[in-house]
Length: 164
Image (cartoon, rainbow, N blue to C red; front, top):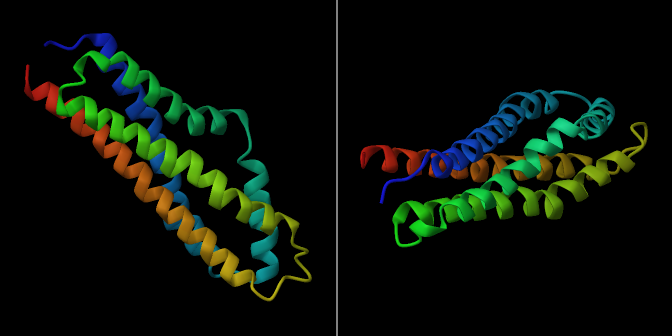
């Protein structure tokens, strides 16, 4: 069965959005997190709170939640291919993004964000470094999930292109 521009277009949009988010998490992990390991607790608490506050804007939310929405649309647009491996790769990519990014962030990263935002930079909790390390590890997990979702969408398009 030949796929349409609409069906493949939904995949391309999901791929683009999730690719942007994977790049965001990756860049943050290999640049910002590493730099933040080098600063004092007072600076870490101040800057991390500023990052958390400044990432809460319209464009970030569009892309962050857009990866999940685009994944659902891609599944629905391609449901007639439910007997193919490419369809199940689309489903897998969407599930990985929704659970590995959106839900994981809500359950792990956001509580850590709220914790660091509550700190007084001049009177940090004794375990502030552990919280920092937990957040960094959680962000690394988001890198893995977003990259896996991204790679699965690429694989679907490669599989479909190879059948033409």
